[in-house]
Amino acid sequence: MDFYQFAKSVVFSVLKPVFRVEIIGREHFPKDGGVLLCSNHIDTLDPPMVGMTSPRPVNFMAKEELFKIPVLKGILPKVHAFPVKRGLSDRQALRTAVNLLKDGQVVGLFPEGTRNKTGQLGKGFSGAGFFALRGNAVVVPCAIIGPYKAFRKLKIVYGAPIDMEPYRESKAKAEEVTAVIMSHIQLLLDEHHPDNKK
Image (tube, rainbow, N blue to C red):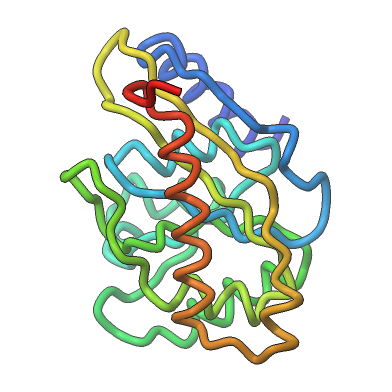
């Protein structure tokens, strides 16, 4: 077992019983090929929660400052995180993400860019559309339905892959594709929210 799988199993064994995690739709996840995994963002625990429930290893961007912390700088690369400069157009991070997708790997992204504490899905940044168009990958939408409270059920819902080829052929703009991705996340939130009476 490599370090990623070891860390995943440890995180899973701790978080799953505490938050009574229910995983829905894992069968939708492609078994191979590049996947851009796009989720809403409600808590700092979202990256490990998505990472531990995904059927495949997920590469997440992490802010560059974290790689300067002694304890983390050795661990983050082993759990497939790579640095990104915040507030700047980080070309190296963009290239890394696109290359990972083209290499058939999974890249995790929170298109809102920061945690949204309102409970409503915020607007997504165009970077999600950029990666989706450039990365030669499908997009898997994901909804995290909380709250993160001990022994209250938390749902992680994976939706069906979104084929990006029609958008590439029509030369869609990154902003348009991001809007499509966000609409799919919203549909998952609406369908699986506990307050939905359907």
